[in-house]
Length: 153
Image 1 (cartoon, helix red, strand yellow):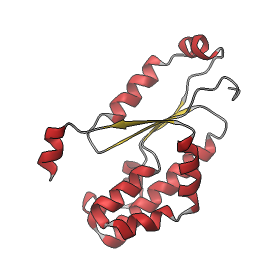
Image 2 (cartoon, helix red, strand yellow; image 1 turned 120 degrees about the horizontal axis):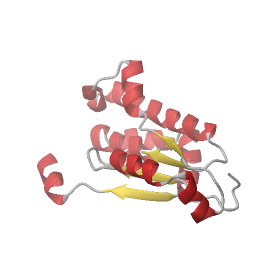
Image 3 (tube, helix red, strand yellow; image 1 turned 30 degrees about the horizontal axis):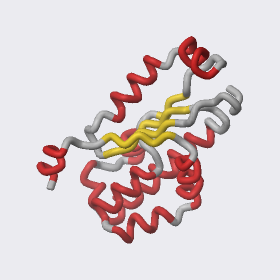
Image 4 (cartoon, rainbow, N blue to C red; image 1 turned 90 degrees about the horizontal axis):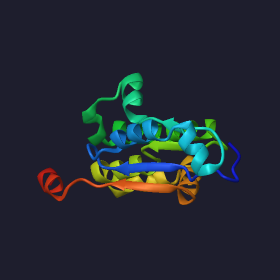
């Protein structure tokens, strides 16, 4: 797809269980080649970058409790940023929808490991590239209902 009529890339961000993956699946189904051709004057549905962290956890042996571990948690979040960067680089010049983004691991690091861990991740050159791409994209924030936020506290 040429970049002239190419839609903005789309990132879905937010806490867990806020419907990000469900929304990606809905967009995947809805954005048919014919609809994209009608909207953009060209043929071609967006590529999809699926959620990466679960695959990383499975292949690299991380567990859910590692998210709170200062060493393993930081390594998990760093691996997630690197994987997101790699996935986006493979799609350079193509339109995509991403189930999560490079900001997700940084937020998780701050919530579970503290601000210094999050700041360490923002120093990665891969994050700077991802951030620049996000500034030129459509970022959809999926919020948890207020009731669920109160339960988590």
